[in-house]
Image (cartoon, rainbow, N blue to C red; front, side, top):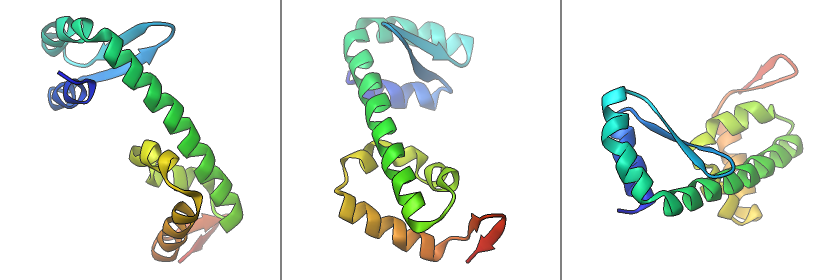
Amino acid sequence: MTPDTIRRACAAEGLVLQLREPDTIVLSGPQDARERWAPIVREHKTECLRRLRQEVTHGAMGRRQLEVLAREFHVDALDLVDWYLDDLEEIAAMPLAKLRSTVRDYIKHRPFYRGGCRLS
């Protein structure tokens, strides 16, 4: 089983895998699902830890890129990061020119707040 397969299956049962440094994976969710999935997560702990760390690293990089673009486009960084929250890893791998174009297009089609004023 791959870490992504494990995460999807856990999510389907209401579980969330979280990284707690240095080497701990925390399963949050229903007790019966935690009991069922804990041995599987333990068996694949090394791969799951590696994947969770990648997500943290790439997520932070993606967030930083969006914050830079928010300043460039004069929009609220929190709104922008919130909109792309599930895609931070993909954003981190995206060339900046493509990301800039994607964000520019998004801003054109979504209302944003700037200094307390709604932008359309």
